[in-house]
Length: 152
Image (cartoon, rainbow, N blue to C red):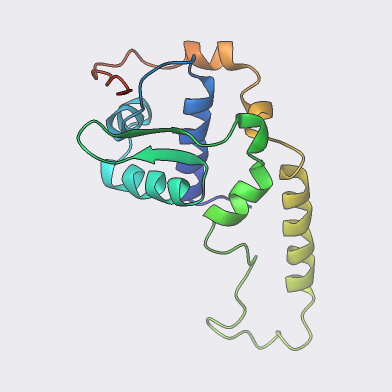
């Protein structure tokens, strides 16, 4: 099973935020795009969606930005994949229509595989997948973006 880039980038964004030391500043889309070399438009859509879902707390405006909306322990990877993926249907036998569909057992096998895949992901939180945060932080580039202070 391969995740869409959308889900991949959403998870990367949350991982990045989770491994950062506590700070009084908000994160910016430009920071994520620089770290992962991603399109600002794509990251903007992902951040907006993650904000609507409550995974991020977003603040609009000139001095706006975002930060985690939940603790990394509260973010379940299986649930995150379910809400970010457009479809977890393993195969579409109708486009083009497959003549074997009425008697085929492949769809059931693949559906079972997807269930097993999600069952494994359900066992992990964001905190689990960044538990080696000291190693992950060393892999990040130095940023050339000014950081904005939170207004009190």
